[in-house]
Image (cartoon, helix red, strand yellow):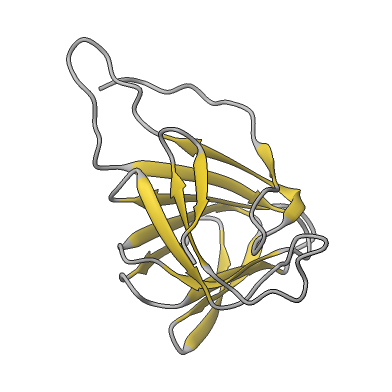
Length: 152
């Protein structure tokens, strides 16, 4: 268990299906201390740049997204809704979801996962340069190590 201070956000690059160099993010986990470590939760802090979007995707785990600043449009299952600071979106495991920044400034959010390893099945893409002709795939992020893996 520990306190984790704010840290720098990094550009969203490296994922062939979700390349957003103008958006920034940070993966946060409990580094632990002599009293122990929380291994069942992870936090993603993200600033989505104006006009950028998180492509439609699913996870095999539940997710909680809390918007802290800006304006967005969230697709959740068959529906879509505008969100602003303070909106919380509970995403059931397996539900397609994605977010677009529709405001004039960054759209800021915190996403909480009940695991430190998150699988993502992409249904749409923001392809990295040179990867435009590829199909969406499944990937895995290990929040603790920062490792990114293409599963298929």
